[in-house]
Amino acid sequence: MVITYEDFKKEIYSLSGIDLNSYKERQMKRRIDALIKKNNFNDYHSYVIALKTNNDLYNEFINYLTINVSQFFRNPSQWEVLEKEIIPYLLKSTSNLKVWSAACSTGDEPYSLVMLLSKFIPLSKIKIIATDIDKEAIEKAKMGIYSEKSLEGMPQEFFTKYFKAVGNSYQISEEIKNCVIFQHHNLLKDAYPQNCDLIVCRNVLIYFTEEAKTNIYKKFNASLKTDGVLFVGSTEQIIMAHKYAFTPIRSFFYKKVSNI
Image (cartoon, rainbow, N blue to C red; front, side, top):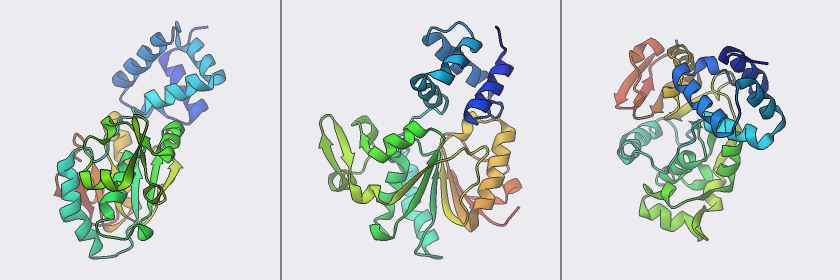
């Protein structure tokens, strides 16, 4: 039996709840075709059958699909803006910040947020919601074990204080782990956390279609408090941010000015 890529997308939606129509097609199809070839399948039909019965293959597919590339304090200059300007601005309104790290991958980003916030707030008062569509990535995040490469951008003060060597890797401390609540979440269809002061969603929206991004920006607006801040990735500046009731306050940082 031969099925088209359109049929394949329907099968994947039925299997995983992931709507491939919301991803840039040429880019995503190329990635999927390469993965099918790598695993020695001849067509979409045989690959879908295998995905339904082979859990390792399915997890590999989800991991590949969600492009889990992450690093502590990725793009350090942006974290400096977060520390020097954004967090002090948010703390003027409340000392009990609600922070959501969306598409958090293997946890590098939410743990970075905890460490940065610890310069302003006691760890006992920090709680970050961290979500991702990839359950395997979330399990890795909960373990909190990272390679030396993941830690390349780590400020020395945090590395010394919160990590210990475990073989060739590094384990993050329990006191940091305890500040993060990890949850499975699909940005395209699941309900968003509400009344957030800060949403960090970086380096994932570039893979979505314009229509999908529009819907996500609207939902981010609804998820944030008025004057709350959305922090996006280096290639994800929001064109015509006012359409979503955001105003840019620095590159990659957008403040919600009203409900849509």
